[in-house]
Length: 329
Image (cartoon, rainbow, N blue to C red):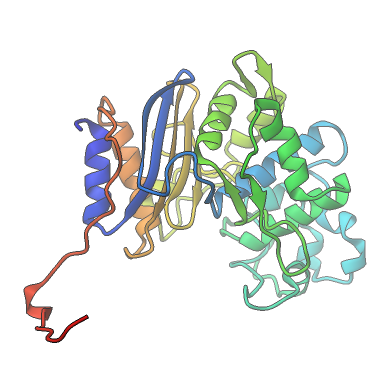
């Protein structure tokens, strides 16, 4: 196994990051595929914040059909939540899509209920549209909007609009929040191979192998830069900009990025698509470190040959901690 992906896997393991699967394609043709035992490209995997990009696709699809406008005031779609702080009254759907809400952090506490209501009851810290702050409650609120406008579940909407036209969706499901709303900020479970196919479709401006899935205007709206992320104090590879619930890497292309090292990457110019699933939580800021390692690998030349299987990283052993055990089992 030689090439940039071999170095990527070795570097990840050196940081105690487990790579569960990695696949890459160029021009829609699979060029690299490997997975760890029990967690390969065909095994459904929780994708965490990759979910946000699919929530954005649902919102932008509805906007393309004229069922909402991204310039709409959020409160016009949730009038029952009034009265709210005057700063929240100014927030538009576009502000939520670009993480430029009036909040400096996610408004809900995961162990508590009322995730949706928390977005309308928290105290804003600044005017919407002025600052980028990563906010999963914004994505959850957008999920509620999708379900409200469509009259269907997040899972049904995304399956019908994105997965099904490509013949995908086996093993795909969406976890729900405490109110029963699809957790469009973190709850997507899907097969990595399906996400690679979807990345190829997005690289093709909504079309793959002659199948039109999304209007090109929707893909353009998804990937157009909306927010400046240069002031982020975490994730150096995430400071080049933000589109609609989608990161824009410094070297071009786009990136969906989820907790623990879940990454979907695409670049229409090079026609490359890559999906990585992982568990990076044993490493401090491991998911952000993994994103940087992957982007470095994509600049490092040929991917190399894929191994038959990716080994789980062996834990380091310090003989000083060993102790003798006597007895019988």
